[in-house]
Image 1 (cartoon, rainbow, N blue to C red):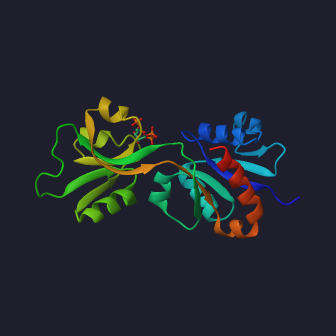
Image 2 (image 1 turned 90 degrees about the horizontal axis):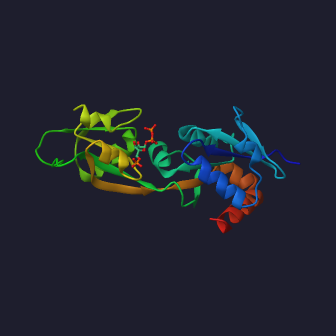
Length: 209
Ligand code: PRP
């Protein structure tokens, strides 16, 4: 038998929906659900291995070909870019990128260069470049909502799902940037070398979306 097809799954928010989809598609994910601290898990009865990784690492592993496929959010894809095929919009993990600021502020008012805090500097840079607007971007690692509250920034570019985090911190969306959802990505060489296997798997998954 050929070596297992390796799929990298994003841990955390997308994990549950991805496993539900795989199970609905007929794959036995028991080992993944009972993983403990194990990071590479077999799918019983199929020549597939699941790797659980952080979103950025899913892209790195797929890009380098050590995983054939991956499930990752469009947010991470937009921030990291890279060389791989993005083949399926899985339809879950829905949220959006948005520009937000303190409630009641007129964000675009005045001529001074605005400061934007974000976990996604590339996405933020492209958004403001497309507007022809010069901004200072400050990279933050978590809870970006803090930055305008602490007066570090005039606004944030971040993911908004339910809007609860913004609301509970006195912030509001100034502008929607782009909708986001989970995507299935495939290594370019794997798609050539294991085309039939990968296409079969994708068609089973698509039937169960
Ligand atoms: C994301 C995002 C917001 C929050 C938005 O962070 O950065 O803080 O979710 O969700 P809401 O609109 O439903 O309130 P996440 O919880 O993924 O944590 P992180 O800060 O560790 O990235």
